[in-house]
Length: 349
Image (cartoon, rainbow, N blue to C red; front, side, top):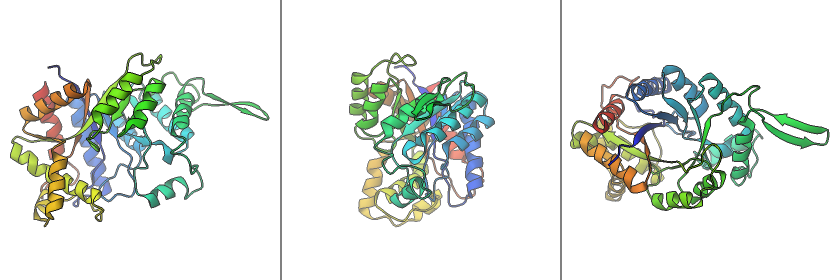
């Protein structure tokens, strides 16, 4: 069985013992571990108004990570395009590509990445983004692609043609990926000849169907003559399977709270998660979730990652390291997340 390429997805989690500054310091340290251990790319998510997530602004975080690393590709997983004017996104990532040529990915998603009230504040609170931005996602993807190209995009106005460029003299462009957890983005990516990512770490259902649809409908493009797929998965690796299960518990509690409409809070420490009195139904939901994750000792986790890659026919797996922290962990580090990356890379080497 071939060994898949490994990459990293990071939501910049905020633990109960951390400030935002601590969480960002931990992300920088984690990115350096990924860079040192041969991971191919490091993507930052976009979520808003969540007590346990500091990843609100992917281009800012990507710039921070690129500056702290040497060779790893950096990017968004993803920018939620309906939250933003396409020109702003194109400008941000064109500048990143100019600063770090050949290292930048722009992953685009359609979901709001937040609750309805915060989505309104993002899109309409300042009067900037159209109310139908989600419905216009395909057009906005085309606009971003055109604006980042060296020629820009032409607008025909009553006064004459007007060219918009994301940056004055581009010599290269970021690689654009479409992200999704349903078949909508699979169809769109196929029709545009773009690489496609299925959010297996979030959904875990419909993965095979969406990937098959993408490959069946793929229309080759100049930049991507063949379909390219990538799979994301939640991962915890520790020296023993028992320790890995324990370290997974804080993220399990967070995901159960999200799925059952509970009040969201900063991510618990392992001991805090163990002390919670959890209803049986919530315990069962957590067990079901973990069944779709990769949680275990190094050799077991490596085998699961290889199996995922083979099952879904992808040559790259993007791991979302979700190991929690125990009491007394330095606030500006995430040692269990770092160990997940080291142990998995070593076991797959």
